[in-house]
Image 1 (tube, rainbow, N blue to C red):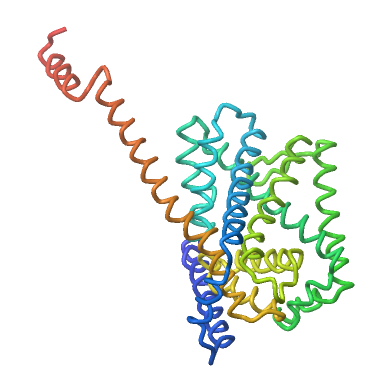
Image 2 (image 1 turned 45 degrees about the vertical axis):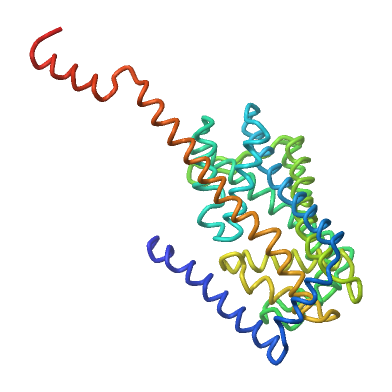
Amino acid sequence: MKRILDFFWPLVGFAAVAVSLWLLHREFKGEAVGPEVWEHLKSISLGHYLLAMLSTLVAYAALAWYDRIALLHLGIKNISWVFISLCSFTTYALAHNIGATVFSGGMVRYRAYHSKGLSAAQVAVLVAICSLTFALGTVLLGGIISVLEPEQLSRFRGKLPEYLRSLTDPTTARLIGVVFLSGVAIYVIGSILRFKPLIIRGFRLEYPKPGITVRQLLAAPLELLGAAGIIFFSLPDAGNPGYFAVLAVFIASFSAALWSNAPGGLGVFEWFFISAMPEMPKTQVLAALLVFRFFYLLIPFFLSIFVVIAFERNRLKEVLHTESHHPLASGEIKQTSDRNRAGIP
């Protein structure tokens, strides 16, 4: 069964990409996409590009904070911020582009933190806390938006499956927002009152201390605010619905991309976002999304490859150095073995 699932979910992801790209093709059919998008990219001012870059740095700094928070939950304080930042940056840069199921919190984090003395169980808890932190931020901001501006979800009217279309009704959206915020409140109360830990097949996940919970509720929204800021600053002023609307559409589109399991959310994210911004020309929105992909996904992805190569190279050098200085190096082991067989002490 596991072997079947190993093939099933990647197929689901690629199918989602194919369907989304077809939908995007239908959206832009008959339009001169390339030249218009290029003109929009050139029309973005240098100041706005710099603000988009700053938003990217804010988002990745918040992601590094995720790891730091998880390490504090584990009681580990001796790992430097530089190491944590590089590990987090590499993990998320690869996961965002290739797929969270492949790298997120798994191989990359294990290789990095195991070199600092963490066990596999500790890395598993770290991954769980980071995932929980992201979920908290999504639920918290999603709840706030649904309560304060429930009409934002009406942007997806006609784009959701039949069983989800009731979500676009303002009353239903506000009710869901209250449920989301109540869930966050229960989590905070559980942290304060120290509810019993969650145990799944021997895996134990305890409620974090209140200080950790406060950090989670700050770090997660900060990451989403930064990521949405990249798109907001890349959109022109004319027709721009405002940061709050961009944030709402970003959270919904990004969540849909994650659920689709599509590599990098390719096509899924773009189609949802463009469909939910009818007040702006599609090519302008597409240009902003390309800036987002370039700053938030592609540049970090290429940089992360060099980080992984440098890390593995250093690890290999350490192993070779250790072996060459071992008191029983390969030559000495052979000599000792020969002397033992000869009966020489």
